[in-house]
Length: 225
Ligand code: MD3
Ligand code: FE
Image (cartoon, rainbow, N blue to C red; front, top):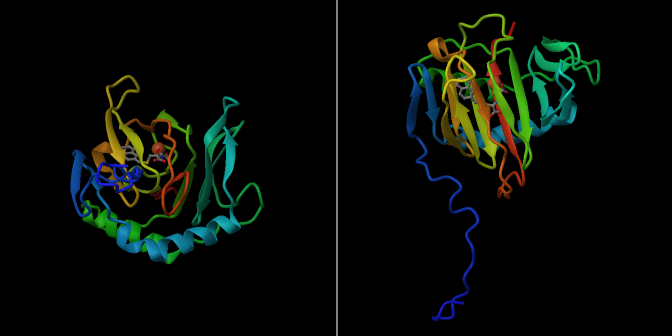
């Protein structure tokens, strides 16, 4: 209690999004963080995401090196990303069910295209949406995204739920990386000269997001085929 008798409540969400929706941060020559860009779309986006996850639930995959990823994955669209002991690749079928990956919902594609356009990439036609789920402690170590057939198309990434610290590196794994916090509703778009930068996500901190609970979900849209 304070001395005026009002109860002191800890505002667990006060630090959740110390950014301004609509703000655009340039983090590379052709890489941008669009703060809060997805927020006006969430009432359409989240139900569509639930549908996709019903058809293709999250699963933890094994890397070619034999390690189980801490991040759980799913996909939608014509192609989905998979890893197992034999390597990383895009496939037309979910290896867990043998069925085609769920269709990419229209709202996913429209939002990804709107974000790409805002960052200067016209005519983005994603054929793959990877869905990553981080629970507290889950992380993604520094890597490059280079399984996509064409490196000309950008990648669009949407962050939902708990905040995370994104590492934005250079073109060699050992290059120094920037640390950029990403919040619920933020979108990152990168392409062109920044397409092959190393990047990763630091271990997710404990927390409760009012909408998504104790997790972070990241959608990445690619032209893979
Ligand atoms: C890459 N996902 O799925 S996306 C992945 O948040 C992946 O789940 C991360 O890396 C995640 O392959 C990060 C965000 C991102 C933002 C800017 C980049 C990746 C970037 C700039 C250059 C290269
Ligand atoms: Fe990546």
